[in-house]
Length: 472
Image (cartoon, rainbow, N blue to C red):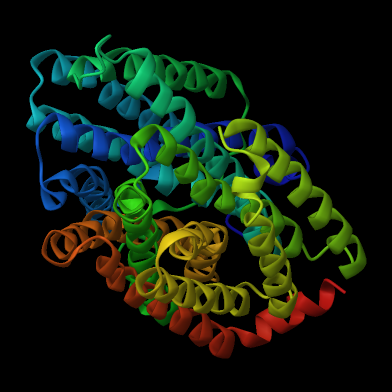
């Protein structure tokens, strides 16, 4: 009811905008995952403890909290900023800020000064904060609310594609191509890669500036002032669940290289390929989620499409990583388990969320109590069950918010602060008790997500029941 006639007339022309925004999701996924390469690199370069090296994630994801808090405070006093300037301008501003963060790596590397790296990461994080607030909400509006989870899972799948190739390509750039000839660590190795990332971001921004994007603006800006979003209990719980999800996912990804060095005696060049499997699992799960949570196709077609997508994405991952089929064949077991979990979830976002969270709790416990390959397989398998969590938590949290959608979105994005806080705590435990035992921290994170999914299943159950039936 809040859209003008121009927007309504564009309702059937969402394909090009969705493809354009999906390209942006890919790029920011790639750059975000580069943090997992930077952490062990800077740890070696500056002789940091685990706690100190986790300041990379603290500054990057802490920017999400600061940026979202500023956005929220502006929205309750002046009205929703995105409603005033439009989603397109908001997205372009976020791209520009992120590109600036990448450019600032040049002076940081030139002076080889750790605080400058942290400052660049903070600016980069602020840019991605704006993109999270605008682009995620924008994708959820590009179609019906019933298919929002499916749509966001698809764009997040390409975000995960970026995170999958980042460890391999980014690791090659920093650990090999631009490293010192004698193999020693040097901050200079980060200069050219991040200038390349800045250039690509600016090119994506130029493309988006040329594409006609539909506008979703309310007729009266005063209608979105105040604290209205906080009256929704499922939003408040969703904010906490998002804090735990991002914290858990980032903490696990941040420690995989160190974990493999400790338990399997792998060096960084080998470990980065296994890190790709962790993020590649998220990509597989998000493509499957986009199909499973689509209520416009039958269960039989879902099974066929999911099998085809899983096979294709697995082959893509196999072609990217420098590992043999025997070394990654264990992943087929997780893909089959992922299939089963989706069908048990019956296309209900909240129920599926609870099931995936429960599996990750089990995998984390296995990571902590087992050794060798079993422990390694367990931690890598977490990625495929992380897959639908961001999109499902996000869409469940902002479901039914109406005119408060952007304000609610800023609160959910603010919760990405978890990516700054949780790794710091895990880093402290890793220094005290070892990397393997530090995984107790993300266990608690996934327990919270499990409970949130159960809460939404109960209180939003009548909505999910209707949606699930429409999928048959």
